Length: 149
Image (tube, rainbow, N blue to C red; front, side):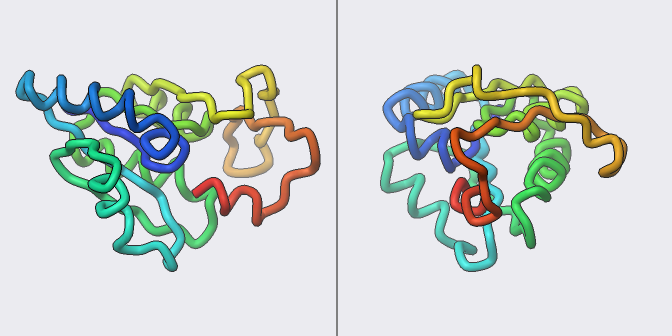
C-alpha cells in the first residue's frame, strides 16, 4: 500500500500520531509519501521539518503553488502519479479532489477549527465544482489561507 500525508496542520500538529502510523506502515512494507503544497518561499524546507519531527517516510514531495487554491489539484495530480491509495489532509477541498480521483481521503480537523465550522458552498461558476469551505469566526483573508500552508 502507498499512503500519503500532508505536512501543514497534519504531521506538524500531530507528529506523535503520524510518527507511529508511518513507522507501522513502513514496517509492513508499505510506502509513506509526504506531499506538501507550499509557496515559493518555502521551497526545499519541508523534508527537514518532517525529519525534525521524527516522522519516517519513503519520500517528501513539495508542490509549489502560486495561490493556495491550487493545492487540491497539484496534490492530487502527484498522488495519482505516485499511485497513492490513502491520503491524510486537513483541507476539505483537497480531500474532495483526492476522493474524486479514487483515493481514500481522510480529513484531519485543524486544531481550533472543528468540522462543524464547514458549510457547503456552490462554486459552479468557478470551474464547475462544488466543495466545502470553513466558515471562520471572522472573515478569512488570502493571508489566512496562505498561512495555513
